[in-house]
Length: 423
Image 1 (tube, rainbow, N blue to C red):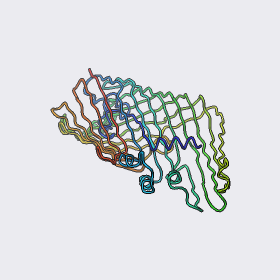
Image 2 (cartoon, one colour; image 1 turned 90 degrees about the vertical axis):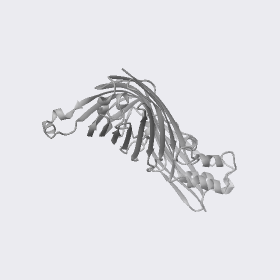
Image 3 (tube, helix red, strand yellow; image 1 turned 180 degrees about the vertical axis):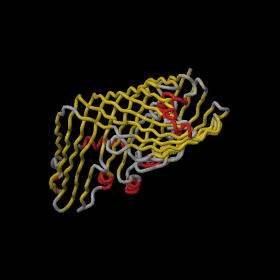
Image 4 (cartoon, rainbow, N blue to C red; image 1 turned 30 degrees about the vertical axis):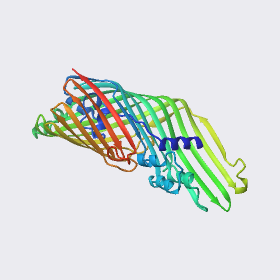
């Protein structure tokens, strides 16, 4: 167990690398109604019909992110290489609210093709989420209080990681107005539907699904009883589906409209792990040890490994709702997104994002994005620019995590780049 805690602490206080769909980073993921072509596969397949050309190819977009939820650049500079006096220790603890969290999300599209009706792509996906109780760090930095029971539960101590490769096919451009005659009679705006299906190849899975511990220092001596169960697997197969609707609900002309959409991803998503599947139980104990015994080996730990035939990981349902208003070269967007609870590798806090873009001379996009802080999610400030033509598009993005651009209070940064060819 001590090795798992060391890993979580190291990840939490150093850095975090994250890759996601590159075009969404400059908008802080306010991208549901902006995504077309290959990226519509992962956002809203109903938007395939909005591709500005007949076909699109996308090659290896990238995003690089380093972040944590507690240690800002300013705090890091203040404590690095210095003796940690009580004030600096208090600054570290004050920066943590309940638990120190770490999260990763990699989505690297290895190849992608799309036209205005269907799209085929493959992506490497890596999702991880972990946290460690603030009380653990308090014990490390400040020591323990006498006669206090430190109780640790899974609520503030967890770690899970999931990696898989997907092969995704989506079909859109389905005008549901044609299927429902009353919609034609009422002259309702066109509503398009898209659906997708993904074959999944599991790469690895690690999940700590049980955790409890108690530490006490009293007249009865030092006592610790800590247990955790971790499920592990490598190589698996699975599937998931996606679904979305999209409509220009107000359409004044070609470059002046308001679009809205809704999408669900990970529908019935599961991966069954069939290789190297096992459950590891980690036990750590200190049983009524007194000060005059501290020169002895007081720490007892044990690891119990149980082989299992197979087990299944369920992917949480991802609900997304978004709107995008465009007036000539200016666009504004608002998105809501949330994962259902149940899989500890995913953060289930609601994400609320805003994005804006202005196209200078119609070909040089300047992009800004902001995501509200909520729960364990930090606020995001994003910026991007590039070139955008009908048959070619490229761009890069920069993101500041937890504070405004270049602020010493930032808790991480991110970069992205993408290139699309159309014909």
